[in-house]
Length: 320
Image 1 (cartoon, helix red, strand yellow):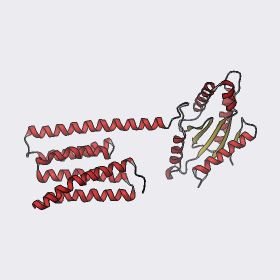
Image 2 (spheres, rainbow, N blue to C red):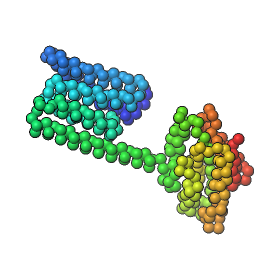
Image 3 (cartoon, one colour):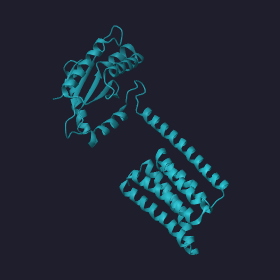
Image 4 (cartoon, rainbow, N blue to C red):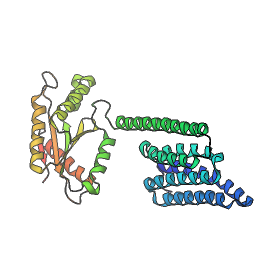
């Protein structure tokens, strides 16, 4: 079985709850001979079932969520139009459900349109006071749902951001690097010139053994600050593990990449990261090639790093 995303699970749960809740009413209304409302109820059940099946086999959750929300709203409005204000309470869960399936702005937009149509349907069927109460409570429900959804989304983004940062240096971690590679190899980014730098601090084990891990940690922090002060905003830096780092430069040709790598190497060599001890870095560089996967690209750059270390360290080695 395919692994299901959080969005798919929510859609399945809401869709299943809708079917279980609405289907009995459709059956009862058929038995009562109330064909119009029965048709509305069974149409909702049929369309939600079709959407669930569609998502189950295609995993295309985005379009399905919008479609399901629209069907929920149309079904709700049709029921109120046929039956009147006696089933207006179905409007409340329908509007709340929209915020579970869509982002806050989309849900608010669809619910605002639904609320306008609902007021038009109920105008003249309810007293002004009752109609005002329904309108105000629905506005408040949408407002509170929007705030809750928006705040939850911000928290989710913040947690994702924190989960992709190296706790010591503040640069991206392996997870962030993998996501960057995935984005970079999507079709619309395939033709962008990009270069991969793999950097390793020379003899870093000696630094930890001689000066202690606290000093070693400070060296890593200062090294990252130094690198980030030189690279551009469109470039990205990641801690790959231990004292090994990766820099991805965008819109960079081979000559510019080699020049930058030499500048970074020289910058580390001439900066005092530890008093009375010179810290140096070895760098391997590879420009992305056409029809090359991310793993092959990284292996080429990593191979250049190995070559730089074999050449005596404090070197830059550039892949052809």
